Amino acid sequence: MPTLFTKHLKIYFEKSAPKNNGPLLFIGGTDGDLRNKPNQLDSPLTEQFEVLSYDQRGLGQTSCPAGDFTMQQYADDARDLLDLLGIENIPIIGVSFGGMVAQELAIRHPNKVSKLVLCCTSSGGVGGSSYPLHELQEMDPVKRARLGMKIRDVRITDEWIKVNSESQIPSKETSSSIKIFNSKTSHLMKQLHARKEHDTYDRLKLIKAPVMLAGGKFDGVAPPRNMQALHEQINDSVYKLYEGGHAFLGQDKTAYSDIIDWLKEIKP
Picture 1 (cartoon, one colour):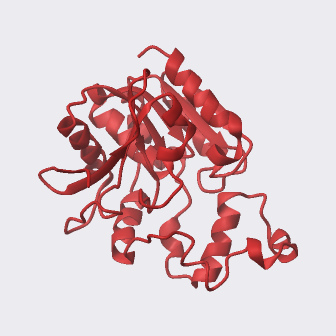
Picture 2 (cartoon, rainbow, N blue to C red; picture 1 turned 60 degrees about the horizontal axis):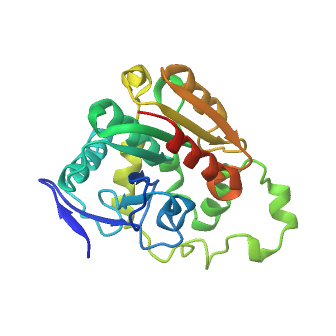
Picture 3 (cartoon, rainbow, N blue to C red; picture 1 turned 45 degrees about the vertical axis):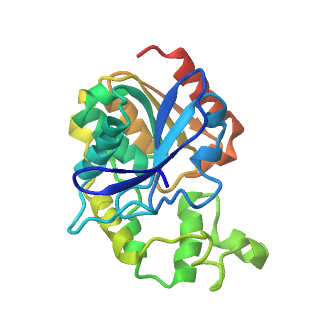
């Protein structure tokens, strides 16, 4: 099992086959677990890059240190992983919560980031926070799953849920088992509480790497106004919205294509 040990935790990671365009680090979102498929290691990125990804602290097969977690610790974990792999400078893709971690990484450890892609994420602070997922954890699992559908794609309404078949809507049986592997609630809450405190807005101008911002037009988790705020605050950034919600990477086939083209064309 591919694991590395930092001073504070055991990190589980995976990587795809080497490619001519070299490696990139993909930082995934809330409650991510590489055992759940398909994931970033099954994405079109692997056709052009050696994709490196990992389970973040407390999730998947990475250990869960005692105490509360901070966004700075998540960023330092990414730095530590790259250090242990002997990687000095690499393109970074951060999606959702992973985009928050990637912001902190680019600010705290700019030498590690050659290019930065931030997808469906937020700066926190003045720039707006992503939907407060920590507030959903005490809800009935079915209600939480159904509300989650509407948040992730604002085109989904109560009326849509009424007229669609039960096979398309989470039930009591499926709402807690959509994923094969689920994090312990206490571990997930550590991540969600760190997420709640995320705020890079006043430090975004410290990001030196070129940045691509990509969001979903119908995302209610990280709405377009949050992505626009990132664009206005980051010195060297391009910004595009895609046809989809929070999962636009899987909904709009042009999204990955654009990201790949940008990564290949932009010089750090």
